[in-house]
Amino acid sequence: MADSKHIREARFGDVASIYEVIRENPEEVLPRPYQDIFTHFDRFLVYDDGGVKGVISWQVLPLIDPERPDRCLEVISFSVRKQDHKKGIGAQLLTAMIEKLKKMSPDRVIVLTFYPEFFKKFGFRETSKENLYQKIYVGCLHCTKYTSPLTCPEKAMEYLVNGS
Image (cartoon, rainbow, N blue to C red; front, side, top):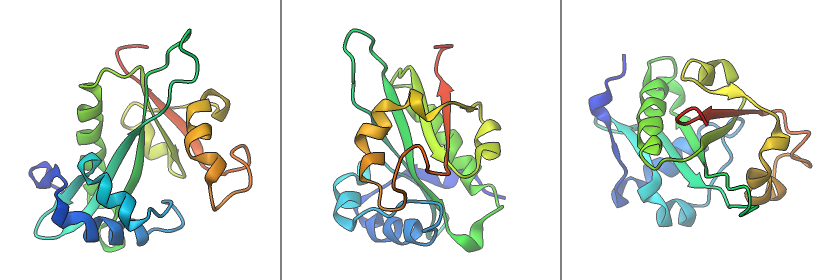
């Protein structure tokens, strides 16, 4: 089983490994350009027990309506090497990321996923994509996999922080 002592903040030297771990799961995780990972490596946590076996990152979603602020963070680039699936690495990474993000005091943390049952175990609940205008604005309109955010098969999930 995975051990949380192997989770740490990413370093510059991890960029190539992060890139490869994300590319191992192209059906579940949108690829990221190497340069994007390089310039945002400080937003990654990695599971490293002698080699990077799992990664997770986050991004801030824009404020759409200042009259109704929604401080929203998104979990992105969450990937575990295929040979290390079902070993608890993903659970450890997600738990560590939730704790990290809660310290920033967002209203909610969102994720788009093909695995809603996994995220439910950690307090996420399904929500309508229509509640994620910030995500659609930032990423979904530029998606290279699906023609419309509303036809994308991923499930929208949210984790409400402090009972928001």
